[in-house]
Image (cartoon, rainbow, N blue to C red; front, side):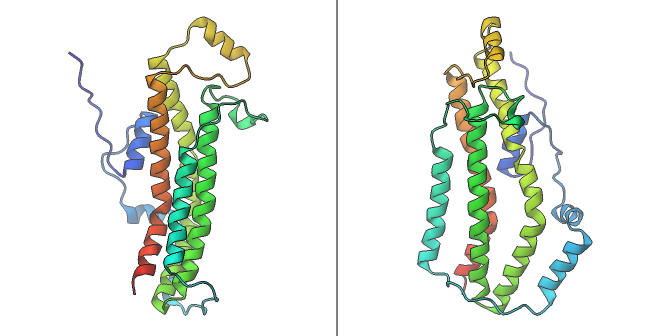
Length: 243
């Protein structure tokens, strides 16, 4: 009879639980208190900037497009485009140029790493521009919403660098997950291991249930990341729809 796992379940958002499973990590049973964590991330300069956004008179909003159904449709189109990027076929061909940061990466995982990095870059660029555009539209609706837009700008400037640093570990955790699934589902023989070590080109992993599972897990992770990146955008959209 198989021994039941004694590992405590990971609490927190689905994205965090998923990454903890990929990295085989144990996280605290009690998540950190949000206000305490924010206090650690806000230095005195950012705290002053946030105070000004909350209390001071705001400048008159610049002219720009008003939020309407066409703008909302464009937001939906952008999200679908990012979904298409995530679901695009992985290019298994050898990279055109050497990547020093990938020198120690499993050659079989390299195409999937490149796919993950490309999807992350697309998400970061698109959601950053969209968030700024929605703030500009929000500032046109009322003074109260203009203040909300200013607060969101401060929060983005403060939290985005930390968010990007944390999201940057996703490709590495997926690499660990890839190796674990491959070793369990299709372990190398000495001959194939030596061939992989002697060849600089990415080796296509042997197809099997483990690879199908990895592809699905990578897609699930990128979709969860897309949801995380859209949280502030969804908040701005909700404020824009409120009259």
